Image 1 (cartoon, rainbow, N blue to C red):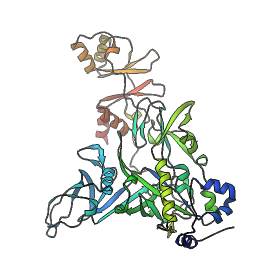
Image 2: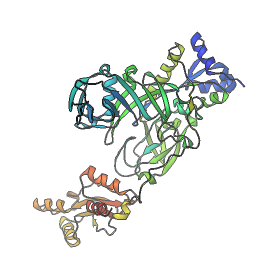
Image 3: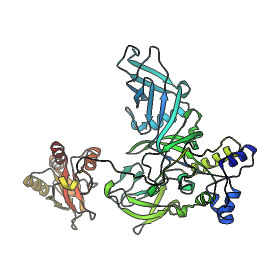
Image 4: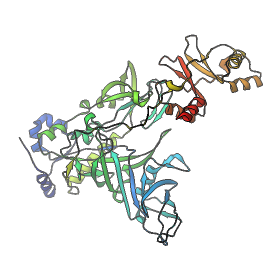
Length: 500
């Protein structure tokens, strides 16, 4: 069996004889030469991924002002950073939102602006002490004015992602992008064949101290990422690197409509081919990597697996979900992942990058990813909704609706079809406006057709978020056949909160 050491490989880098290939090239080499032959032929396999990595951020040291300030709060371009570190250190999180621009700008954009060399406005406040008497600071800086700008990301480089689709009847805005109703699309992430962690799934060469490509700079893995779940092939890494050395094309702030901000990060990991097991692992293809398609239209704790798919299927642009052809779209860039693997390959070939073996490997067994421990059971919509709901048949009149609301002493009246499926909703306010305008004909003329609904199994907190988001006070609760099984109101939720 052929084997080599990291010292052997780095000596080849030094004398210019190293043979480096990307993870896309390796399957063909192993197929032709076998795993042992590939060890003799190939020294390093480069990988790459470029996608939204929300659990990212930066430590920033601003230097002392005169007179000095011990920042209690600090904002960069109106985005607040965490200051509970020291006098003039701060941590900017990628998903923190601007206080003036909301979801259009956030921490990820601040980090991009700094890496790109753009000016950033700083506003800081403090309570003042004898050694730090200043209470207010306003200034403008670029990354060159900052002592240290260290990207430090607690959770990056997911081995793979679940695929998101939406079987409900309303559009969802998520960290997996906009999900259209009734399986209107499916979104996925991660680089498949180029995925760094899938090319060394037992982490023989990946761990604490491993030198990596991080957004165009040499960075390091500092440990297992948060939510590291190797048992289910959802491994993650914690990474850091010097932002002053980074390339702006691999550091991009992003806004996901209706969800918030994130940061696109580019990561490449070199896999030294030390033995046949590693060579065999790097021969993985998109057809070998499977993941689950989940229905994001269902509450997280009950989210069903609709099917398994391969990355080969996902990259084809179309998958079948329960008999429907659904368009797929990536939330990450395979084009840029390929560019990262190629750039890292070039660095190594030119002697600009020497791989390091970890001082401690990532754990690949015995790690359990647990949900949050909560005190008491989280109530669902079914626990608080009114189950006896008066509905009205489509085609009746405004006067019929007014009579039903008056007799029942409620404010919301779902409208149903002859098949008892929800088709609209009428409120007491709708009726008052119709009467004022002498519109007393069919309900179809005044009812709201795009009804925001709830599912009986979803958490009350999710229902409350929908009410707030759409500025409404009630939602019909419907089953999978669009039949009304209850109604939940803001009053129901307020009463529940009062009882807690």
